[in-house]
Image (cartoon, rainbow, N blue to C red; front, side):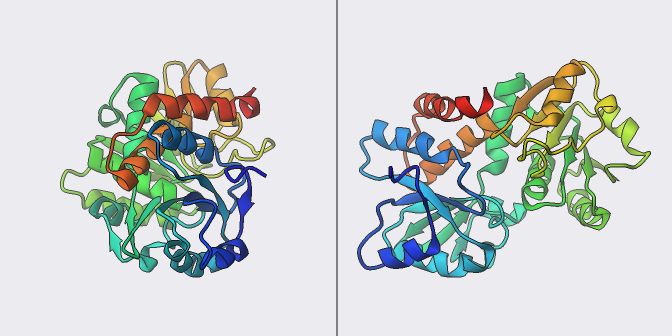
Length: 304
């Protein structure tokens, strides 16, 4: 089986410690089989003449500490992290980039001289993706964030605040998590106006109406039969609706398109996150357009 297509496990990683791994870079998560990162990064590695490969590592939450210790021993250059490891990895790292520390999440790890250093390219990747998809800077928009209580939603919410968004609405089932995040946002040097609402609350309707950009950051929508996290009747023409899920057409984006809103999924966010991670690992510009072409080829069958 092609190394970039196979999903490896902790048991595989244990066996590589003394012999060297067939891959030197990977996306690490649970689940991870759906990830389109390997073909994108493999295209970049080939274009730059780098003799490395990139694959998938299915690591359960309780396996993360051992996996992170084994990775540099097995010759890994770095890994990308996805659900559910972005926050859990923080105490396991030797160094944490200042932005990742502020956001409280890491999605990129680099290994140098055995030390694991954590970075976050989620926020910057989203900012570039929004500008590319909608032709408007993230900082110019009033933003409503669905699923703000999770690791990705929390990091993106804080990044929006740091980027200069004037108004941020946090929507989350567990209101206490959103309220805690609101306190952090209001403590920023140039704080936005912050609102908090539950998905089914009466207060949500005017907040959705006023939002220029809706960001969907939860895992709801990864399964084809998942419902939308937002009542379709609340969406309106001209609104910008961005779903970070890219592996399947989500109900939210289908509803938003029917309502006349402009939509985008997380594919270009993945692209820009990946390009930034490549630059962290190799200290050189990433071949962005070649990575984009490989990414589109990899996901087009699942989105057709």
